[in-house]
Amino acid sequence: MKKLFILLALTAIFGNVKAQTDNDRRVIFIMLDGLRWQELFNGADTAIINVKRYAPNTKGITDLYWRPTQDERRMALMPFTWGYIKQHGLIIGNRWKNSLMQVSNKYKFSYPGYSETLCGWADDERINSNDNVPNPNINVLEVANKSKKYKNSVMAYACWGTVRYILNDERCGFPVQAGKYMPTTTEPPSVIETFLDDMKREMVEFWGDVTLDYITYRYASEAMKNHKPKVLYVSFGETDEFAHNGRYDHYLMAATHNDSFIQRLWQQAQDDPFYRDKTTFIVTCDHGRGIGKQWTDHGTNTDLSEETWLMAFGKDIPALGETENNGPFYNKQIAPTIAALLGIDFKPEGKDIGKKFFFVK
Image (cartoon, rainbow, N blue to C red; front, side, top):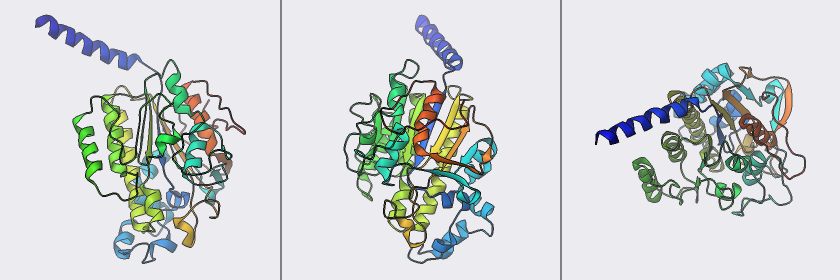
């Protein structure tokens, strides 16, 4: 018994030392489906928030989100973004300040947007629908998982079940947990993961194979706690779903919740020696949306649907704040940027491949 105790103690000590001396970069990459840059940079839109059919409890939602100035409105909507990320990282895409970012694919909806972002180029010939078709293109997470440094240290969690096909989970080699119907991919599952699986089975089906953002956040948080992936991908979906439902009140609340989930994942990383001072966060969306009555929609027939944004903070990200007079930048630049951060060789086999962002050496 005494020998066993000593062995366990040494394992814990040297395991902790190894975690602290392992200086491989960690990347947490988060996507917020269909969140417009207009809300990110301006907060609640007065042209929408006061329309009864979009916000039935108009007074309640205006009390939460309406403020007299732009800075106050966006702080009310996403306090971590504007209270922390702006001070310690950078935010691209405020077109009112001539900071331009967009997708390069011509379809301007989800699967093409995710594929472009994760694979580093827009494959308009083959990626042209939201159908559950395995993506033929290699994504940057897959390349990371095949590298020596990040082998078996990549995990992905998504609200939308189709992300399994976008990442091509049958080929990619790392665990992908996505959608309402798929249970946790970890073995054995933790008590919380089992509880989350039960929640998904029992909850009402709101949007088909799409689960709630909170559930996806908790899966990702559990992965960080128990499995320590060096590369973690998290995709939230409620902003897009509520927008398509025409519920601006729920859309705004989903954006606030996403902001909170980002903050909590960042705090969890800061509290864990495995992640502390080694982790870079990249946050973006997959497409934009229309304006006015078209705010609920996006795609080839909806103007401005190509307009996106990006946030970055953490290790080696310069504190540039809200950028001005730069771009145009494209979502296809994100995969090469993640590859550069990880120090892996990523060469997509496609046309018009994106180049890494200026803020990465």
